[in-house]
Amino acid sequence: MELNSLTAISPIDGRYPGKPSDLRPYFSEFALIKYRVIVEIQYLKALVEAGIEGMTDFPKEKLADLDAWCANFSEEDAIWIKDT
Image (cartoon, rainbow, N blue to C red):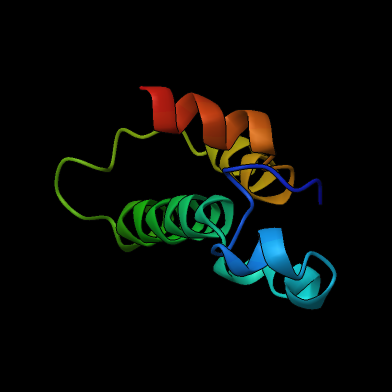
């Protein structure tokens, strides 16, 4: 993961760049955005699969697309979400 303002954990990254590198995928702003998206998508899927009123018309073939987006979530996706 490349170090930038989206993937940095804190000012520690500037002073000790090698030390927190293993934590960036979990504690950076990128990670916060990524895991929020994953949780929201899983919640949406659970609502669809439970047959909640208003969710029954959701196209089932789109569920695989949502899974793919979670699996392939990138820094570009996070930037797009942040800028939106």
